[in-house]
Image 1 (spheres, protein in one colour):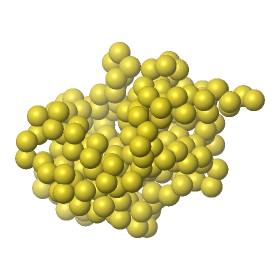
Image 2 (cartoon, rainbow, N blue to C red):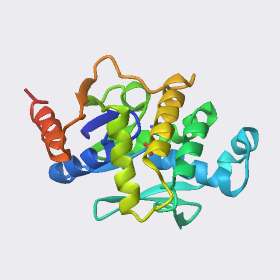
Image 3 (tube, rainbow, N blue to C red):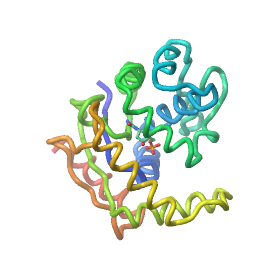
Image 4 (cartoon, rainbow, N blue to C red):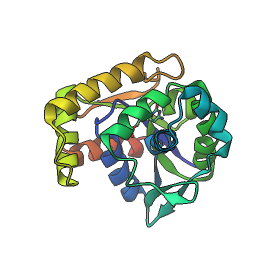
Length: 220
Ligand code: DC
């Protein structure tokens, strides 16, 4: 039986940095499910598809995850789009298309299959509630909107994006939180049996250590 750790939480809470570092320590695969929604968003943007047309095209979308030296690559119709999906425009479109029930069910099997076959830390919005209801450990990772905006701002600046502003990112984060928590299908919410980890004021290292402590205590 594979070990499955589910991490859910709002955008910018540190899910990916923390899950990535903890997976490396544990020798698990880190699965970033947001990348799947982002890739569908990119597909819809490139082809100018509205919701109805996107639903009609879902079966044409060839999407797979590859793990190269522990790092996830997302392959959309044969192209590695791992970098292209990291723009603020794709973030916003991903938040929109992730509310479409057909998109969510299209991605369900892919996520479940990876979890069945590997020891994983999987992050997203509905991992503990919908995708892996029987996960060995569920964490709801959060931080204040201001701190999350500050972190994302730094990340984008470091990646060479000079057009972003802190205020713009904070607005985007608040809008995405609202969208993610208020959609009808699989809204972002804490699973009843999830542990809350609030990383406001914590370093990545401190957060990773908290997570690793929880994993250590699993069998006890
Ligand atoms: O984690 P992220 O910012 O890369 O996610 C992009 C969008 O995808 C986010 O607005 C919500 C959505 N998403 C989702 O609905 N369910 C998931 N499991 C992961 C992401």
